[in-house]
Length: 122
Image 1 (cartoon, rainbow, N blue to C red):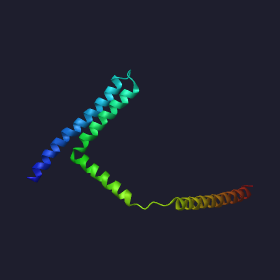
Image 2: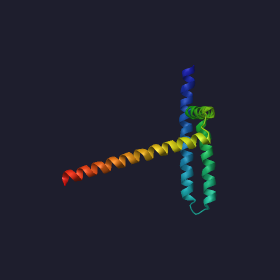
Image 3: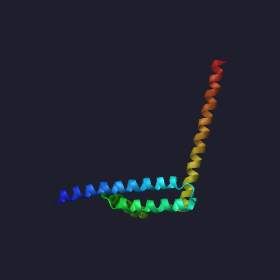
Image 4: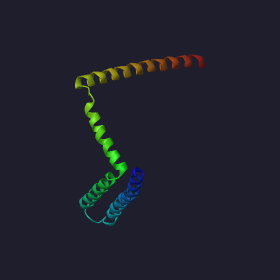
């Protein structure tokens, strides 16, 4: 019985995805067809159709899985311990210091090797 449910859901999912694609094509086509209308109206129309398409997409099994993943990602982001402003500033200064030190070392090596090559070549 579970296999039948998944098969029926998969069949309906295909129809829903087709509807999503048709909505997007309609939005693009409408934007081209009504090119002489105000940009504001065209943008509002595209946003409205996109919201409807997104709603239809979330009704599919893949769409609901994506929505669940997005909610879980948001929950995980809240658990992250972000650095303070002072820690960020200190880390930035350390990185800039090491970059300057590495650039000075490379400049010195380049100058030394250039001088040695000019001695050999004459």
